[in-house]
Image 1 (cartoon, rainbow, N blue to C red):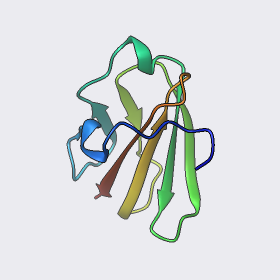
Image 2: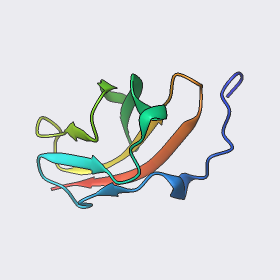
Image 3: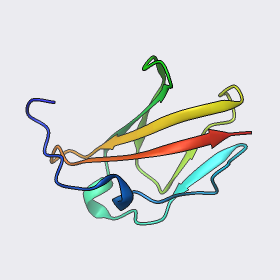
Length: 87
């Protein structure tokens, strides 16, 4: 993606629990992630949820059961990505 620094590997973002039911937590949440944007997409690439990240957890209760990608982009344009299984 043009203009996005992707030097952070996919493994840099640790979300748990995974599989999850209601809330996911970000294990390496730090000040650089404040005011970030989390985008959750389904396996077809459709955006299902977009959320501001101001705390180390994201509510996913409204998501249907399935597999998703979670991408968090910081205000410094660093991108962190992980897969998520929703029960």
